[in-house]
Amino acid sequence: MDTLLQIIGGIAVAAITAMAAYLYHLDKKITRMDNRWVRIGDVRFPKSHPKAHEFYGGKHKGRRELSVDVKFDVPFPAQPKVIVSLQKIDLGDPRANIHRISVRAEDVRRDGFVLVFETWEDSQVYDAVASWIAVGE
Image 1 (cartoon, rainbow, N blue to C red):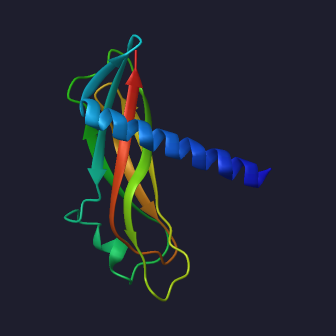
Image 2: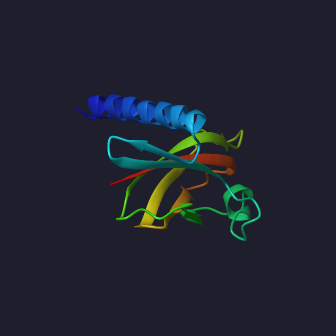
């Protein structure tokens, strides 16, 4: 059952990423589909953020998070649904066998949301880009 869920999860992420890429080339900002508004974008891991060195310095271990505020160009009439996925990652330490990174949307509002990059244990993140899709009525 766990293997099946992993396969389904992988297919869902691939479909969302493909949809984001298609919409990116279609409009990049705002698209109307079947009475729903769709906004898309991406966020690069902010290397200038005061906490960024904790992701790649090699001295920090444990859970580390970095939050980026994302504002929509035009607010939605009601709170939208937001999906995020990783578009690009640059991870690693030649001595480590496992590399960990996740992204998620928090505090979703009509005018934006907070995108959170997270890593844990001894993983090192040098760069990442997260894509997002917001869908609302």
